[in-house]
Image 1 (cartoon, rainbow, N blue to C red):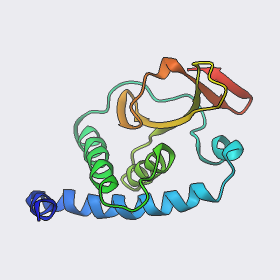
Image 2: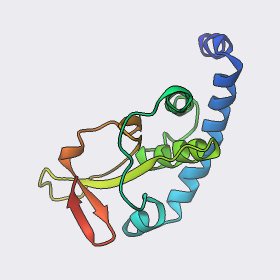
Image 3: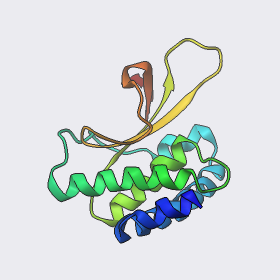
Image 4: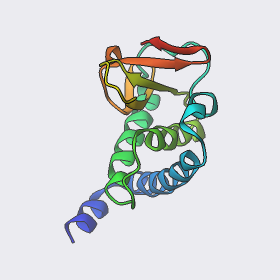
Length: 148
């Protein structure tokens, strides 16, 4: 019952955003499962120079509402979607509202023998999903990896 009470305490826009995030996460998880990891960058990542600056006003409000909706949805969808489906779901929600976001995919630079991939989404300098220290990752580009 506490989850239901918490959910009902949200305003209608947040409740709707949570349902949208749940559907988007499930769709993104299925989408990622159908693409080999070596093709993630060309299939999903942003192209071009990342946006800079912090979103303002309504754009900032929508960006934050999306971030919180994804976080709420993660606690209520099966299978705990990892970082890439989270970023894809949030990006699709933002695109529907006319907000461009940059999706980054990289691998950890710690020298471990196995690759540890990570994806994150930002609107300018505002984090949406995948909060991390970007300096610890090499970004995948069309020409291989480059240090973030």
